[in-house]
Image 1 (cartoon, chains in turn red, yellow):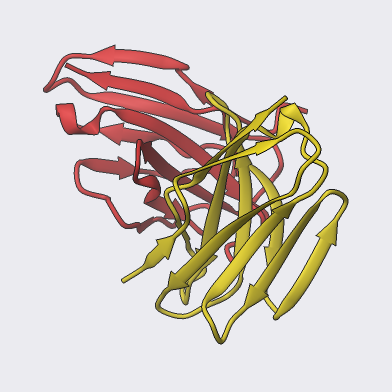
Image 2 (cartoon, rainbow over the protein chains, first blue to last red):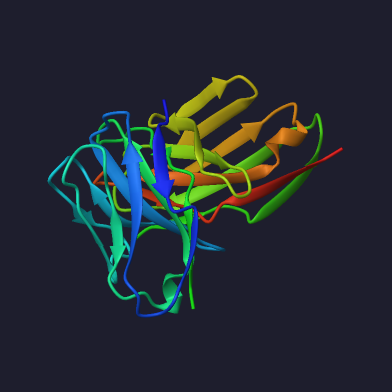
Length: 113
Length: 109
């Protein structure tokens, strides 16, 4: 059982380019989340999805978009990357959107130059 | 808004006990989580408290006081593998997690 996977593991991207970070879970969890983690700031919620077909904005949604076409996949897209989006991105899932343990993917380290 | 405070760093000796405090001021409360994160890895779940009191799970215990907006994570019989960051996260009114910046614990021999 893989749990939750992310791709790519790391990426260096030129500013202005479009980039999609992939996230897939095989636990049939209803809720999925995207966080970014920056030194000294902790994890901050970018977007979330309580169930397939729905999405919502988190604390820092600007410059990012998500979709949830099915239960397993929750891609995060940067339409036009900027250097301030350099960060480590974690995808997570939980069985339900209520106060439930979240399982995190291994992360994607993104550098925007 | 959310305000979650925890110490930046702590150092302790192998076999000792360390207590990591977390204070919070949030819009609503639906429980408090502690996660462990080793360097370069994903956070992993340690504990969840929604009622006041102490929850013990092996060498790790977590305490919550809702009236004081306070929690702590207690790590006993420290081992080298416990060197990691410990993240305090509050579940707010809309069931989303707000994380503190994390406490880096270094265990020395």
